[in-house]
Image 1 (cartoon, rainbow, N blue to C red):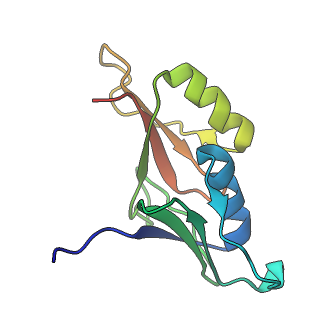
Image 2 (image 1 turned 90 degrees about the horizontal axis):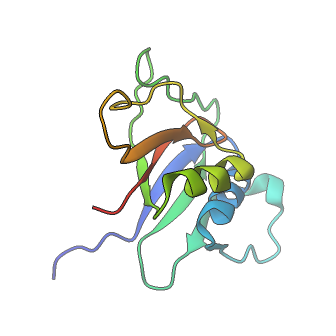
Length: 130
């Protein structure tokens, strides 16, 4: 049997806060916390019914990526498919994302993707379907 991707975990200072951001962006729900103290959660994931999902793990002294330059590389980034970049952008900005100042390919004709940062600095993209 070949391995199947289950989840991608993102380091962050507050797993529940970042899970809440991505839950609002994607419409996925946060796994039940079963009475855990929200301030002490070390790991939380989003529910995505049999599909790969996202998880968030607490890292003390978290340092945000400085991509595209600087001492801390992006390490990874997520792509989210949208049918309309402007509509998708409005949605994620309302949830707390920021548009990255660096937009690779912005000088090329045909806007097919845009780069954003989540609330703790991870870069991610909105992309049009291939």
